[in-house]
Image (cartoon, rainbow, N blue to C red; front, side, top):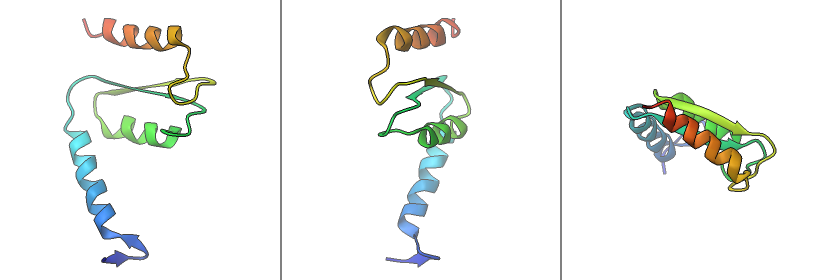
Length: 85
């Protein structure tokens, strides 16, 4: 496998394609994460937010992956959708 300074070039190419695909998203997108999410951490959420031109980022305090208070989650989603009308 080819490498550059210890980096796997296959992964770098995949990341580049992935970034191009994310940049092509034109629909409004809501990225939601919890500040205690270990599966999709804040860094990953921030990368999505910055890569998608139409993205908004919502960080739920105290929430882990899928463990956000349902009322908070739905408030975020419904507010996001309401602003699309």
